Amino acid sequence: MHNSSKNWSKEQLKVYLLLLSAQADFVQTKKEIDLIKSKTDKTTFDAIFEEFKNDHQDTSLQKIENAVAKLKFSHMELTDLREEINEVFHSDKKFSVSERYLDKLLDNLIY
Image (cartoon, rainbow, N blue to C red; front, top):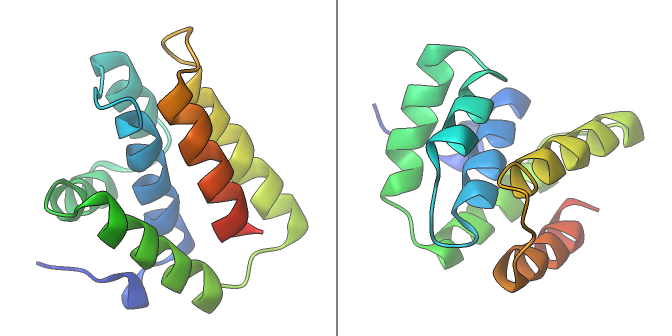
């Protein structure tokens, strides 16, 4: 089943954001994937992962922007989401230039 960002739940958007964060340095480690899997159910992860791996970064960012505009997040939800994104960024004990760049892009898209 192909899901599009216009139909995403907050949980699906979160998983997509975390996958993009894991891919920011062009390598998704097992540790990053396991961390993301621990934050959601298998069905949601599998569906969003299938969609994510077929998207280019520009497509990903557009989907995120569209979903954030549609879904109404409280300030607390956004804070929690940013914490989870940062957890993925730092799971390999590095914060690369490409991760920093994506972090700034996501700040602009999410807030």
